[in-house]
Length: 402
Image 1 (cartoon, helix red, strand yellow):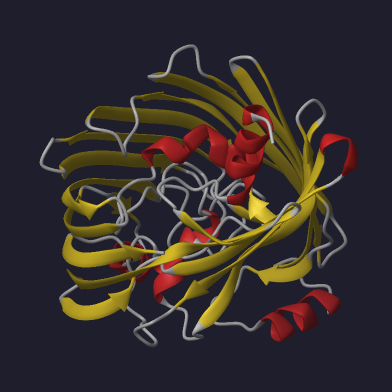
Image 2 (cartoon, rainbow, N blue to C red):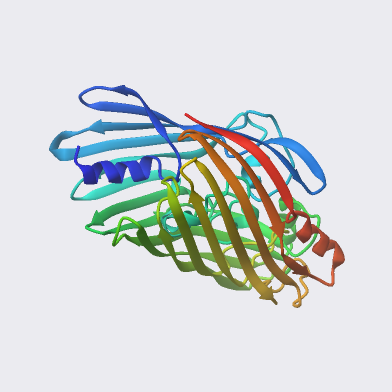
């Protein structure tokens, strides 16, 4: 297998940074690898101290050599919850609230060729993640400003920017450039109502009655693309875009089309797993792409993430990160949940931490978060709900890679 083809497959099979893989089986045609890690931690935030699951996962990757230099590949990955159910709310909330021992994170299959590139189908990391992954290196409080984990810190499945559902994705590379293009082929229909404390069934009934406060929402196909330029071994530049559409039909028969759009760029210097300095930053502009902390769609916002670390010769790696997701005021599409047009949403926090790499696959860590967010509303109950999921905190834990 050529170096270029191996790189393409490796990028797809285990794209997320700092994930190892161990070869379980290999013959003249087939290879099977297992990867992932267990991550357990003690966290203190929101006046609670608790043992919780981190982002534990296990994956199995498969490759098969075919004729004429083609390779078939597949991957399945499950999140693992080794510590039981947890309902504490913090930045990577999606992993922490799972009460199943196993839950789906990734699953796809495809074909790869050194010249013709790679085509994969299934649940996989979106092209947008190529643009912003460089800042996603804090274990506990990873970024929520890059437009990846959308819809109140979920996994980005709905609009294909994170671990996108039902993606068809093509990748290839030429010299110092690589790129990805994708389409998310799905059909999604649901109902929302500008009424508090209402179930979806009740909302659908309200829509059928012709109430203009009820909306039927269709959110189907999305499309994305990214490009990566690596002029040197130390410098990486990225850029990309992701787009979808909401088609709204109100109970009174009126309609509205809403564009879900995010675009931006990133830069990385160094390699976080190598000795020395590593710095990364990205910026994005987004429109109807994410929600605030109580589920209201944000009309437009700007997100910035930064991360800097230094790995010393003794394998201690201190780091600092800063993230801001600024929607300003008047950010909620009207009408929506009785929103005040003067509501302010600015998620902003800094993280400082220390990772000790006992070896390359065994890491002990401590991380602390300081919150600087600004949430303002004349509705003090809504403001309190917004503030609840953003708080100072400290955590220490242990990550064991397979």
